[in-house]
Structure formats: C-alpha cells, structure tokens
Amino acid sequence: MTDLHRLSIREISEGLAAAKFSSRELTEHYLKRIAKIDPQVGSYVTVTNDVALAQADAADALRQAGQATALTGVPVAHKDIFCTQGIKTTAGSKMLDNFISPYDATVVAQGKNAGLVTLGKVNMDEFAMGSTSESSFYGATKNPWALDHVPGGSSGGSAAVVAADLAPFATGTDTGGSIRQPASFCGLTGLKPTYGRVSRYGIIAYASSLDQAGPMARSAEDCAYLMNVMAGHDAKDSTSVDKAVEDYVANLNATTLKGLRIGIPKQYFNVAGLDAAVKARVEESLKKLEELGAVLVEIDLNMTESYVPTYYLIAPAEASSNLSRYDGVRYGYRAENPQDILDLYKRSRSEGFGAEVQRRILIGTYALSAGYYDAYYVKAQKVRRLIQQDFLKAFEQVDVIAAPTAPTTAYKIGASLDPVEMYLGDIYTIAVNLAGLPAISAPVGFDQDHLPVGLQLIGNYWSESQLLSVVHQYQQATDWHTQRAAIAEENA
Image (cartoon, rainbow, N blue to C red; front, side):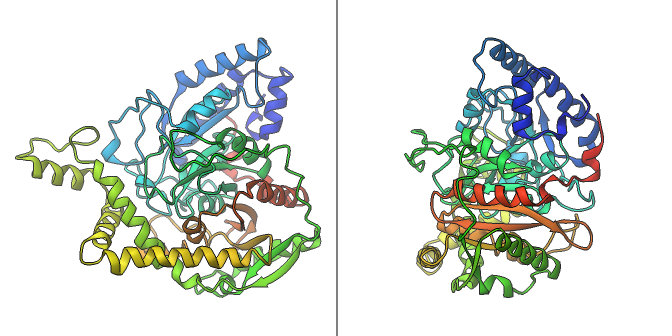
C-alpha cells in the first residue's frame, strides 16, 4: 500500500488488527518516506532504523499471539528531549551531541509498553528555548507547508514530522507554548496537559515548574490515543499527580457542545501585533462552534499584560539552575586542554551552549542574584499566582477559554526578529504554563499565503478529556485537520 501514511491512528490500529498490513510493512513505509523526504525538511536528528524494525517485528509477534493493545505496532517519533536508552539524546544542543542515554524517560517507556515503534528522535530548539526550531545545533527544521518558513518551536521537529507524514504522531514538550505554537504553524492538533498529568522523568529539564509533555498529531482523536499512553502517575517524578487517568479515546464524544460556555477574553483580541487573517480565522471557528451549540461569553483576563515579563523572569531563572549541571565534568561537551577547573567550566559552557541558551542563562542568573532575587524572581512568583487566580475567576463563568494560539502564522526562516519580538509571540500560550492549566491548539484555516492558523482552547485543571472532545466534535464538522501540505503527498 502506498498511502499508509494517510491513515489516522484509529485506521492504523484497525488495519493492523485486521492484518491488512503488518507493523513491519508500516514501519518500512515510514522509513522509506523519511529517507526520501526528510532531507528537505530536516526534522529528524536520529533515525533509528534497526531499532524500529526490531520493535515492529516484536509487535507483529505480539499480535499473532493475541497480546496486542490498540497501539501495538504503531510508529511514533519522540522529541529529542526525551531520554531514550541506547540512543543519542541531544536536546538539540552541541552540549549533548555525544550523550547516549542509559535509561528511558517514563513517556518513552510507557510507549514501549504499549507496543509503539520508535522511528527516531526529532529536532528542536536547543534545550527547548525558542519559538522557531532555528536554534538547534543540527540546523533549522523547515515547515512542510512552506519550506522557507519555520515550523515553530521548540517542538518544531515533532510538528514537522507529522505535517510531512513522516510519523503518524509525535511526542512534544510545552514550557511556554512549545506544543501548541508549532501545532498552529503546521496545521496540527497539539495538547498541553495539566501540569503533573504526564511524567517529566527523563525529560531534559528547561524550566521544571513549567515543562509538561503532550501529544502532537493531525486530529484530537489521534492525540487522544497517545494521551492514553502518556498520562498517569509516576513515582519517579515528584511533581506527577496521583490522579486516575481517563480513557481519552472513549470520551471523545462525552462533552456536549450544546450550552458549552466558551469565554472570549476582550484583551486577547486587542493585542498589538495580532494578524488580521489569524483573527478572522479564529473568529470564524468560534462562529462554527456557536452553530454547533456553544455559547460565546465575553470575559476579562486583566493580567494579560503581565504574562510575558513574568514568564521571562521565571523560565530563565529555572533554566539557569537546571543548566548549571552542564559543566564539562561528568557528561556532555568538554573543552579541549583546559588550563584549570575554571577554564574547563567557562569554555565548556561557552562552546557547548548556543546564543539563545546563553542569553536565558544570563537573564536567569541575574534575576536570581543576591541583590535582585526579591525584586525580580520573588515578585514574578507573586504575579504568577495572580495570573492563576485571574483564570480561576474566569472559569466561574465559562467552561473553556478561546484564543488564537499565536498572533501570527509561521515566520520566514532567518526573519530578523529580535529576541523581545520573538518572546512577545508567546503572549497567548505562556500564561497557561504559569497557571499549570491544560490547553489545546487545533487548525482552523489558512492565511492569505496558505499558512495554517490555530485556535487555542484553554481548560480548567484536569479537563484534557473535555478539550479533546470539544475539538473532536469541531473536527467532525470541518476538514481543516485533513488538509495536507504538498510535500506530504509525495510517495516513498
């Protein structure tokens, strides 16, 4: 079959169960596509051919023995921030270019237990710091919809592999929008779960109180299948919450749109820099949800102007602390012929880290320094609580909150955006991480250049099932999630 890459996760699962094709045939199909198409996209850092085929054969044996789960034999791509035993795990950085992980992240282990087949590790902004996937040591990943544009970041490789049909779904991480924004830029569905819903064990840390892993796929249904594998309590992660996991696939039609109250924040639709085409597509999607029975309610989120400064104090501060472990001593990049221990530290870090990572370490170290800790970091944490309370107050009036995922569509590669301009592009996503809330991005159309636009829906704590259900029902009534970039139509 030449069109296996066009199948949804449900169709793949049913096809494997009915023996229409084997996991090995499916895996070989994807590996051929990767070899042919990915040189144009640059989404994979490591393609694990031998591992994938061995896992596929094992999955086929389990099926023949009647021991398969719904996802046994289904291929997946992992963001290169998830530690994967015996496989290079780089976080997109020269610092970890030689790091072979001795263990699996919990998300990877759970995938293996479910029978998923690992196609490889995909590109990302260095240490997940960025919104374009250009800061990777391995070069920029390209947007399959327009190869001279970025796929978003930091999970740009995860978005690109799915948009180019080089994997049926992928794992991502979201610290300030790094699942949702690339999903928006690449015309995909991406879910950032409630903080603590998915284990962070084995995820290379950027900002520990903000990082959260989640699924990226074409549809809410496909994301639900991966969430069924990823979600759950993990004793190895002290921030993982011991809360029963719902069956996200079974609950896809559980939320009725009739009477669903969707909050429309006045402040979000008056942000300077909101592109007219993005605003129009988002408003059209909200009108469609209204036609399907939802009720639009105007709300206030008064802390909107505090999102960016608060995030860009807290996240770099935590990054400064987390990245202090990369000192050239135990693992990672080590400067050659150091004169002494101080020279080893300084040159290993200055040579091993890229410009954006160094910038955030400097900002964070400054904010945590003795003379400024109370004035900056402590104050930012207090404002963070006010942002959370602002959302909780809004959820007294509404069930979900709607917003654009990003104020623009994908940037051109090499666009001369200064760091502050780039940070302002996170205005709609970062507050969700500060508050620990779940949110989802779904495709809702295109701009004048045929670049995808995303709608973001923000939920109250533990409402992942509701968010997936709302988007699933929207996707039953629209076909934006079925649109494919021209490069994705190429056959291997």
